[in-house]
Image (cartoon, rainbow, N blue to C red):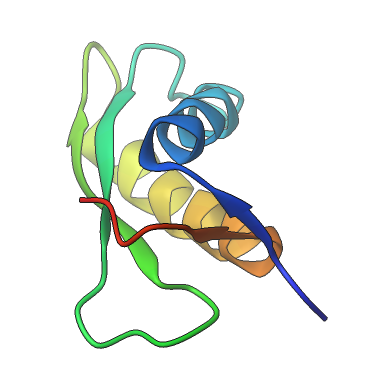
Amino acid sequence: MATIGKSSTELTHLANEALRSQPGCETAQVTAVSARPDAGAGRNWEIPNVVLGDSLISDVDRAVITVHHQLGRRFHLVGGEA
């Protein structure tokens, strides 16, 4: 199954929407996504930092893993942007 290419800005926006829709993560914010070194295909990006806001770190940890897994199946980072 092919993934859809997105820029770093687009992926960050999608990740923020998905993260904030997770229980307990309404105030969390993905600051940016970055390219994974030496990733040739598939999940070639990662979420390195999240601002918690009023969210609990345990809620955000779980949600980031879920969001990255779900979005990583559908989208890949184009242009190797960081």
